[in-house]
Length: 424
Ligand code: LLP
Image (cartoon, rainbow, N blue to C red; front, side, top):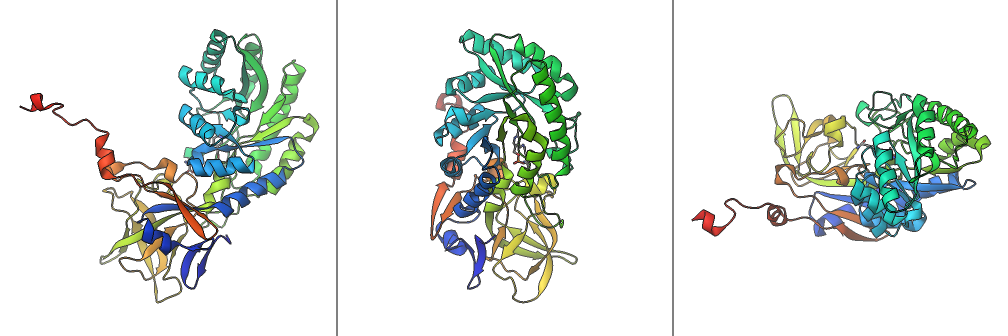
């Protein structure tokens, strides 16, 4: 990534030394590069330049208003999965006509919010959900634009917790039930069928799962059209992986992915939607932390840093590999470190046996490729407040989410006893 490099021995994002940010905004914090996000978006936009294509950024990857805002300015729409994400997309300036709503359990208030926003389409995942959308739209004398998310029953060859397109996963309508689902939807007065949708998983590292799913969706589209349904739009979901390193695999590029899309759908003359999340923001962000203690035991050296599993869950819950950089790189001897956080769980672990040049308390430790599914998945476990987010733009940086104070966290709770009288 040219946006991240060492300059005079200091780790820099674009033209800003990360240690200068750390001096203003204490660690841990997330740090993103605007140029890296814009470059990732441009790779998709260029790859699909000849298509009638809407890139709907999957907000779940990173929903900070500044990040969504800069993608919106680049032309992105939004893929949202909750009323909250819908409101974020709107607050970032994305019009309803560029928003698709995915997820297995849209509630009536959320459906109302989406109808108010005039979203482009609901990606419907079950018949009970279809009925809720139909009834809500009818009550408002509206017709809701609907695509069914089809579960093509293919193996995305990714971590089991982020694979979504197999028959045993909770997502979508089984592909062999699609005809019946569309026929029923066509009979509902509050529903307007507009397309078909799929999403088979995340961090997909080869084109094969996409090829298998696309073949099934293309065939189904033809079949549904033959049955008289207006399948105007095909939403291909997200899923393209990021090169985290550590496993020697390189995910396909947006250009290679676009080539596959052409091969699969060229004959169908349809509008396309894609919902990338990770591949737009993953490599554009990092988690910056500081070594609190180096704890040496008879067998292992623990590097205890000030970031923990509550700040960044991916290593703990998916055993995810993230590259680690320090400013000692290239200096002194190397040692294998157990890189852990302060939270009271053995699973609070970022890396095992990671070979790094020797570090001391106070040194900076950067976990790379943390722009997606980092800040958004953080919790306040161990009463550790959510950490700030910083956006670098050229030679300047901006705090785009403030640090939450412990006092603000405590203020959310009600004390017990509730009143002075009860206390007495
Ligand atoms: N569309 C739908 C309907 C999705 O469920 C997802 C991700 C996306 C698009 C975006 O997928 P992407 O392009 O980011 O792969 N927390 C996990 C990832 C969960 C992904 C959930 N769905 C992780 O940290 O690996």
